[in-house]
Length: 213
Image 1 (cartoon, rainbow, N blue to C red):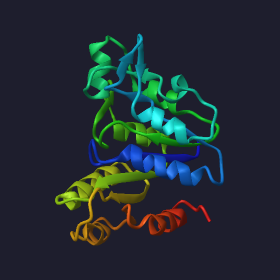
Image 2 (image 1 turned 90 degrees about the horizontal axis):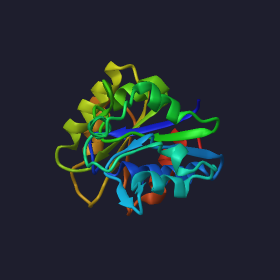
Image 3 (image 1 turned 90 degrees about the vertical axis):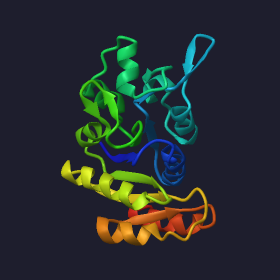
């Protein structure tokens, strides 16, 4: 299976936003399937659970998969995926998640929460990433503390022998912290900054990393 696994340093750091942007770039040259195998904090509408993140990914994908394929495990509870599944007495395992991510197309998989967030019974995000064996994109919010968050996440990934494609610093607001330089130096990996003010530069740099030329 070919594709990317998108995770990061925690929640509310813009993983889905970055995933959408990457999917938009990738679909210019190939068919791209998307997977968000489990999502909690879904909204109940007319008896159906409506996703927030998975629906956004589907909107950018040019594959023909429906929501049940993209996100088969959906929960209303606002908690970790493991906790949400247990609350509903649903047996959710690493094997279930791996099967849910399967695709014959190039696939972009977005995890839930940070790289060490619980996803299923005795399963963290990092376990799914390792099982899928896809290059890893780590998203980190570009703010004070980002260096520590990024380096801890990089260390965890390397301890599990994961291939890190790059760290994407998601800059919500312009700053002068220069986190990218420190993360690149201490983390010894590619670091790309996403900012609304430098989208073209980001596209060029990430395009080279993903071989989009």
